[in-house]
Length: 106
Image (tube, rainbow, N blue to C red; front, top):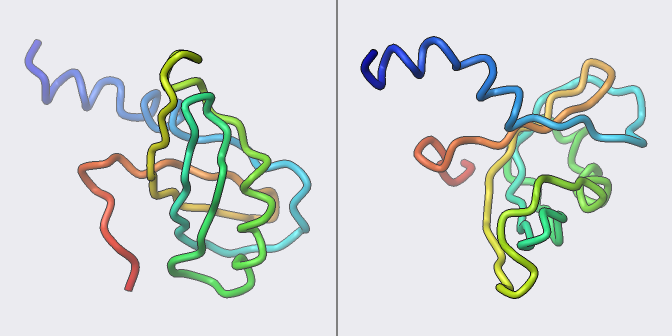
């Protein structure tokens, strides 16, 4: 099996592992992109709205409560800038955009 076949086979699973529900969001609908500064412990340290539905802009504060998997050991301080897409309908979830597809907002 080549790499393209593996990607096709596991695409949905890979997408699910990049997504996480956001608790404590109001019942709103929309889609927006955010830049996230994620610490080595997987905690979102900062979030900035970049584009999309303005009604989701206030979620910047709520996104700081999101916890992803650890991305480094405790002995190595690390911060990673990631881009994520929030979709609310009305429950909200954020999906991290693969680094190869992340582009600055317009």
